[in-house]
Length: 253
Ligand SMILES: NC(=O)C1=CN([C@@H]2O[C@H](COP(=O)(O)OP(=O)(O)OC[C@H]3O[C@@H](n4cnc5c(N)ncnc54)[C@H](OP(=O)(O)O)[C@@H]3O)[C@@H](O)[C@H]2O)C=CC1
Ligand SMILES: O=C(O)C1=N[C@H](C(=O)O)C[C@H](O)C1
Image (cartoon, rainbow, N blue to C red; front, side, top):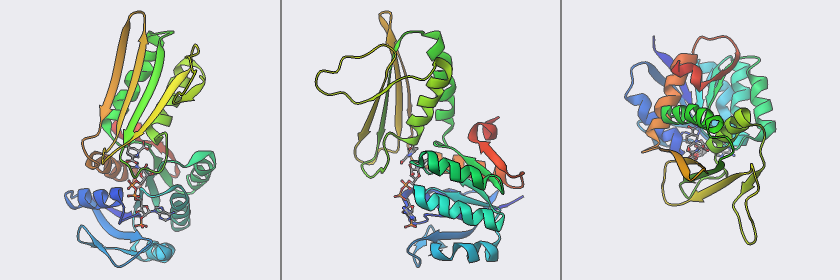
């Protein structure tokens, strides 16, 4: 079955990657691509006005919308999907508690699959972290993420997800964002470091150190294509499901 896909933020880095990845697959068909500035063609797809999204959803009847945009637009576009009965796959980060609450409201009406990272490698890293942290009780933990110089939010959505994983298995910890001046480590804190440089697609390292040893769990995305592929796998998986909140790990099971 071919899943009819709509893409928001079509002129953005990830929007373009999703359109490029979709062109190489026969399980998805892009029926709509929108941007705040209509008129461009991206990967051979004509980009239409995001302001017309409600009407365009009714007219093109996509099964799933794939959204990599900004926190405000993600919620606006998802609300339009709730009205139109269109499922939502979103990887937009920086949503904050209010944004997640709003997205969960959308999930009362349509299926919503959210992931701060659509790579399989990060899913595996998260499993490894959840195993390593309790196995290395008392070890210091430092989390470092590195991204391109145009990224808006810090720390990355993936870093926040990994921090939640650590809290889940070890109990809530104090997070120390960078250090400066007289700043000795306190027991149990997790150091969090965000680097921004060049066009790095995304790197995350969890460092555990203690007992005269250290363990470093590192993931590097070689290109944004890995995220686009995961998001389209999620779209194909989500189509036709009941309204509700879904996780990328369910796609990988
Ligand atoms: N979960 C994952 O695996 C991944 C998540 N991301 C996340 O995806 C998001 C987009 O990243 P990226 O593509 O690099 O960013 P870009 O800035 O390149 O693209 C985002 C696009 O979203 C649209 N947009 C941005 N702000 C607004 C707004 N206020 N209102 C309406 N539209 C807006 C714009 O598209 P237009 O002008 O066409 O409307 C913009 O080009 C980020 O949150 C990033 O963290 C990125 C990679 C992987
Ligand atoms: O903005 C990006 O580029 C990325 N954002 C996501 C995040 O915030 O974790 C995922 C990926 O690392 C790329």
